[in-house]
Image 1 (cartoon, each protein chain N blue to C red):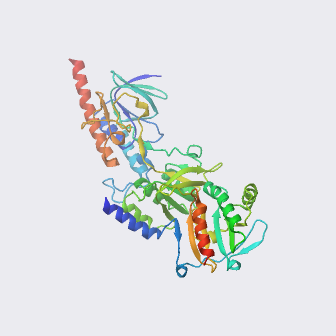
Image 2: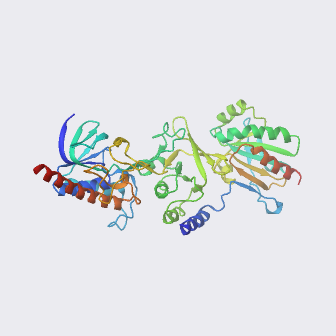
Image 3: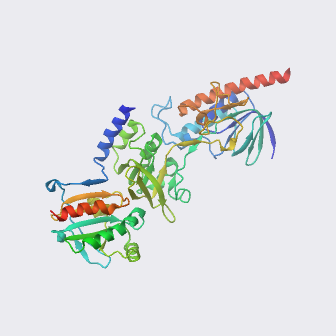
Length: 314
Length: 167
């Protein structure tokens, strides 16, 4: 392991991390961005079409937007490293970030590690992951050409990704535990033009079955407790998100759900540690808000570093 | 929020029409005619719905990969044993490979005919999820449709069977 001194380590390469990286690079901070995936973009990169990010009237694919953000940050000198953060020691100076292959030391840290899809924790989910069970329609959708698939969850993500799947799949069964669809009406309107779309409301998925690949799912009506089976070859799960903060331990204060607590300046409970994007305890998790967080976190980190420098100089 | 729910509900109706899991039609004149079909059992014998006119017919759409279907089968066997001497037929329509249906039928000692289902019949009866049971009256009309299984299913099935047998 090597010890490398940095002004700033940014953890996470989604829109918040990349924006923080752009601002940090332009401020000429010695910054490094650590992203666990081979390509940056985070969850946004797995979104087929982002239509509510300003400046793209026709929408833009999450992959393209992420690649553009990364290119822009790199143009100003940001170093992006593909490495998974395993743990952190943030309370003492310098702060230390341990990854699978290195240990990074820095005066300031921006936590932008985002969120990850929540699992259902039902039989068959883990065993058949990658064998019909997926959390990313944009990544895996084309494999299901002319197949029957189930989309679990009818929030915005479920409807949007289901719409993407409708380009390929023969039929899409949306399964929702609530008695109503929770996503935006505009997304639902688009689905009405598609054939083979069916909704199973008030239904809980209890099991995914299949020997080598997913073959069917079992649904249970949460009111009547009636059980039914659907024959599907693909199961796409969109039942919410959870923060990617397991690696943090108790280094900073988290809320009950595990999101990082931060004040209006994005300062966490530890000096010099800032939180930006979806990982932060906040109301609206969008690319647009993540970008704003990233800019502010980098600005505040720079101010913090100036303070630390002044203290050292004195 | 309420506005959003209302729009969603209206759109669902537009998308799906009525998606009831359980429907019974008490008024005989309001019942829809059941689609006619001819299917073969596991020994190759033909079963035609048209030839069942004059009897109450229970059709059970099921498959071997369907856990709730497996739970329901013992209750269907009990119903079959109870009503087989009356004007009543029970046919299982398996949406599966014949070999799988064969071994399953033997294992569970299913005494009633197990027919090899086709996508055409499945589509004609708009079966999207299984088990789905139809109870057809003596004039070939759909008296009841039940989608899904819950413990004690035989009670509601019997209730409909008795009602149709008495018509």
